Length: 251
Image (cartoon, rainbow, N blue to C red):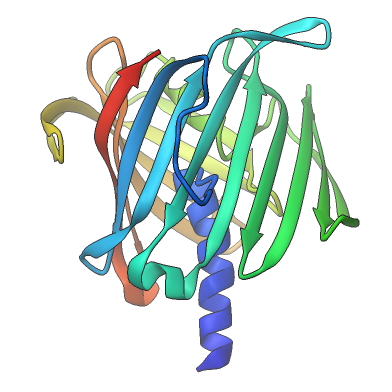
């Protein structure tokens, strides 16, 4: 049972990080100077599992470039915390086309402290994984064009055409491994979220790496704001897991 629980925790660590882009922190909050902030309630096994905040910041000078910080943080709670006790904060800086150039994640999962620093260049991703202040691993990946991470994939999708049946294929780094993400756009229709009924665009997402495969459904608002409304997937004994929008505000 302990081995299964350990596998579940490792799986949740990567899966929640990848699917929710969860930068989990002790208290979810929007940083000062943000453009837009979205708060989500997480539910697993039919119960409250925590919250997450997705923030799009205002452009700032990073080195010689003007970049936009994208941040996601939050916390796990209830039964889910028994499987994944996590505190992390993820920030990715993207250019005007919403492509990432650098990222940093500070996280504590099951009392293991990690700092992951990533740089993105054309056809290359490089990352350093530090644990308890020491370099644990260095990673390099070659990609066909440009790579993405757990955070930048969301604003990038928000700013695409998203016509029905449009398809996108993206390499996405989760802090440990590189996955291939295939996105298929559906036809806009109404979707229920805690703040009411919204008209949303469903995105069918397939995440693969070798023989590993996971399917996810992401809903983006059908209006020009394209707010992420809901994310749904199934995972092991936890069944259906959801992240649903409960509030949003502009800076």
